[in-house]
Image 1 (cartoon, rainbow, N blue to C red):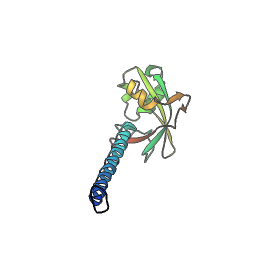
Image 2: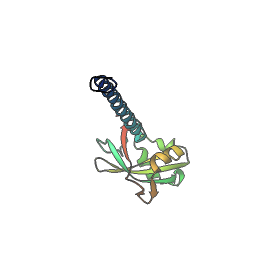
Image 3: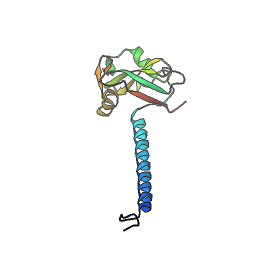
Image 4: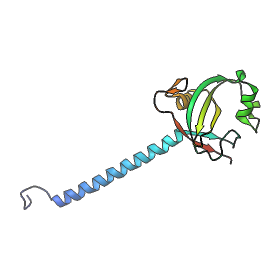
Length: 148
């Protein structure tokens, strides 16, 4: 029994609690950092090149709409616009795509085509109900241009 009538040493207990609290705080900060990192990966749209359609200085964009489309049903102009000046549309396989309408942080509107698969549907249409309406706020994406 200690001199104040309690069992244990309060100073060492306080020190142990302080160490425990610090470890918990560091663990929570690490978990939050990891969550932000993985969310940033999920909320990223990558472009292999600096396409003409991409606004100058773009860093982020908000998804305005996402609609399923068939490539062969699109006009030549849309395909030209999507890939100009690289002519990759000639290499794009026919099939189902998602046409994404985005508003950049610069204020400019642009579109892009992405393969229609379950991963992209979840990423781009997870809370999209159609007609430009989302269940929650519109998703925001970091824009990565691999070749500048």
